[in-house]
Image 1 (tube, rainbow, N blue to C red):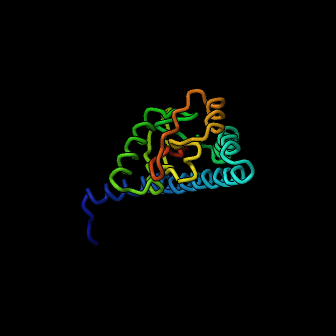
Image 2: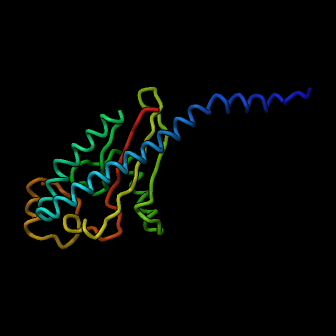
Length: 187
C-alpha cells in the first residue's frame, strides 16, 4: 500500500472541508440569479400592463409603488436583501460596494459587454457570518427612454418631479447601463 504525501492529504482534507461551503455558494449564486430574473420578470410584466393601460405616467406608478413591494416580497420569500440601485438613482442610492460594482459594470459595458449579461458576486463577512453579494446589471431598453431618456414628455417629467424630487435617473440612451438588481443573502 502506497502512502500519500502529507501535502496531498492536507489538500484533500481542505477540499473536503470546503466543498459544502463552495456548493452552498454556487447554489446561492444560482438562487440570486433566479431572484434577479424573478424581480425583473415580475416588474417587466407590471410595467407592460401599465404602459398599455395608461402609458409612461402609469408606468411611473408601478416603479414608485409596485417595484418596492416586489423587492420586499422577494426579500421575505428568500430571506435576502433585494433591491434595485443605480449610479444615477431615482429612489435607492447605492451602498459603497454597489457603487464600485456599478462603475465596473459600466466600464465592462463600454468595453463591449452586453449590459444584460453582466453580473457580479462575492462572499463577504457580515456580522461574523458569510454572505453572498450578487448584482445583475439592468440595461436600458428603448421603451425605458420614456421615463429615463433625454426627451421626456412634459406630463411624464411632471409626475417624475412630483414623486422623485431628487431624481437623477434620466439622460440615458438605449443600451446604456441603467442600474442593477442587488441581492445580499446569508450563506
